[in-house]
Image 1: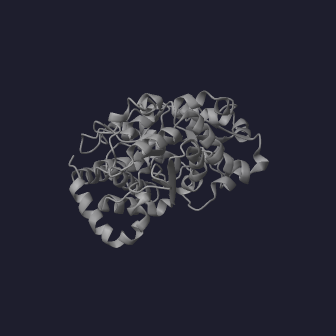
Image 2 (image 1 turned 180 degrees about the horizontal axis):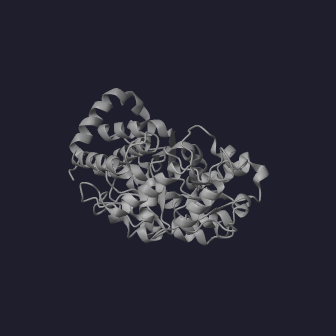
Image 3 (image 1 turned 90 degrees about the vertical axis):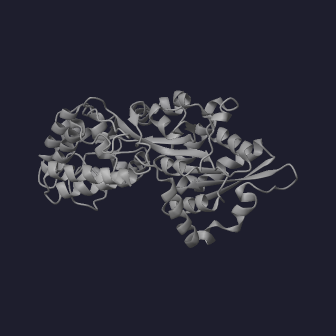
Length: 421
């Protein structure tokens, strides 16, 4: 597998010329961590945070400023759809923030480009950054090669959402616990009549096929040009995945609102993350007491995917001490529990899950249980291309009727090309 650092930097230089104006003057002074704030002793650190979390982070940062009057925090909320390009520009120009949020799947790309400061020398002062404080599935996103380059801020995973009343009608007093039970329950639910399905599988979700593969014992080998995708465990998992569509238990139609379909009973089971709890409660209040969540059914394991976001220090930061202090604050157990109230995102720290806010909440506790059995995406820069190539292959199999084995052979050959680029 070849490094892509040189190609990456060449591309970012080109992008920089297109997006240079987006960098703004604020990132050249205090906002980039180079200037001073009000008074000689006050410093300003800039924090780039993405999406809705970025919009809410100022509330949390205000409390940090109260406790640290010599540090001013400038939070810039960046939409997810523009964040990647903005980060590329920062890498090319060297004018980034002090602290940046990265989605866990982005970590390899920016770590490979040398954009993230190695935190290993700071572990003695900040032992809370040590990987053992976080879920095992999240630990791989913290490291790149032999460096510690990020600290998990929040995490998420996927579980099974299911209609308890409809499962009861087809003989399941509890959620399916195995692959065989999941297939059986889906078949019985789909048999209720025309237009009824058993399990909703989002064909655009690139992680679901790998969840099934992990559950079947597959593990990607990043030293193998084909990532171990030739293994029978991977092929068997794809056969299982596609069988739900071929047998009519999952719908190939796109555009149907999952909450409405869940409410109507058309799709009584689906796999999703913690954000769906409040969405279902808000949009389908009539379902109160008729649905729940469960850990995923198992084959060899019941492994799910782990996602979320990490905080890292940008490699050109001139305020490293202040940046580290900020990351320590936002990943503190009490702060994470406060952040749960503000943002409804799940804490990354293991210790936080002992609190009654999580332990005594049946649905959130289920997510905590699932987080104990998770894997993250392989830490390779080509991962997004590999995953998207699989999604395209699966659509040709499921919708286009392509031969599964032949299509998988083409997919593996394409992966080999991607890995060698």
